[in-house]
Image (cartoon, rainbow, N blue to C red; front, side, top):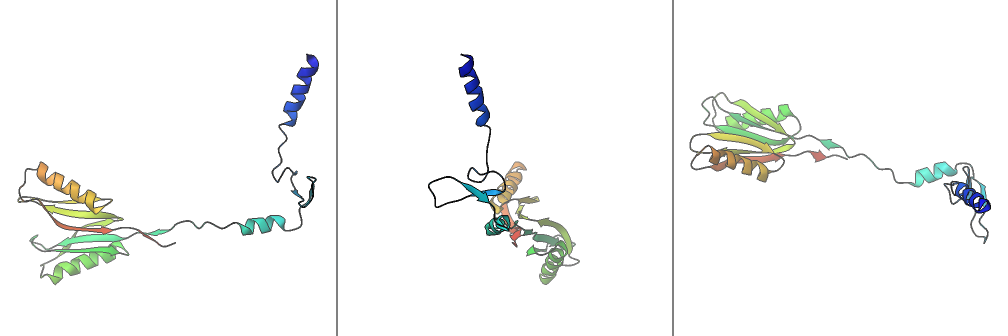
Length: 167
């Protein structure tokens, strides 16, 4: 019984020996082309060659996009811009759009980045909602409009300024 126990312990100890490269110890590689499993020394530069042959994964890079809304001093005229490179570009474009429709003293009412916007109007109030998609923003805006017991709820404006993959 002791002999069997010693043999089992010995076999268990042998099972802990693990070799990374085809059963060869570190610094060696398996030889091929023979019926016998054998190992030899790694040739100079072997590890560099195997590392270079692996494709390099480039990290994804994204560029933020901006949008803005502008209104005139009376709140009757609005201008909008989307998909701009910077917040300032979006603001400038929205104010220019408002002025193009004869707005008086147009000013930026708000900006958004990397998302969508919906402006929903009812008979007494206008809500601006941002979300990941136009559908989500529209749905939330319409829900707010109906919760305020407004009539004539409709989407006045919607757009997206979503990030763009650059690499």
